[in-house]
Image 1 (cartoon, rainbow, N blue to C red):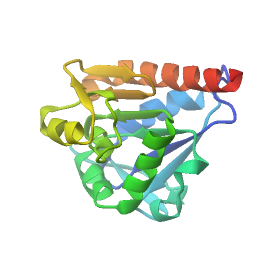
Image 2: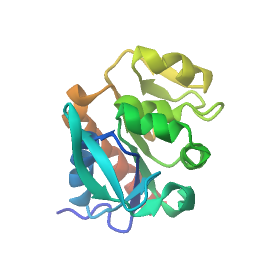
Image 3: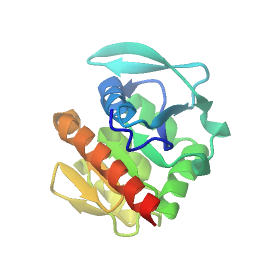
Image 4: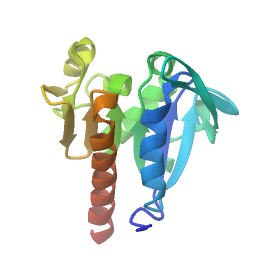
Length: 187
């Protein structure tokens, strides 16, 4: 354990139907850095993951989405999962929290469907993103630039198209979050 993120709190924003591996793999790696991870959800008590082609495991919810503030967290992880993201997109609280991170220049990692949650009008301000074709127009309308790469690290944002990039995504997330924490600690 290298403890490079000790004292940092990372929000994981999910709802029922999130892609389990897209949450648990980065979560496992970030825990090894000493970070504190908190699951924020539209659900109360437990949130149900999606694993393969069926429902997966239940995970405890640390804070209900409506009660969470972006200011309480240093970094944000947005796993994919079509069901989860559809529910999160319908919440003004999601836009409030994600918007806070984008405005404050705090690190964000998004994968697969989770990338859609970054499409808040005027908030992306030229950030370069990996994005499936289906979300590109919304992300561009929000001010984002789309790359043809499957994994993109742009200043304080990591984005990846899907589970095929999961190993590289996890490595990039840990590196970016650690680098940002080191720079801010030195400042």
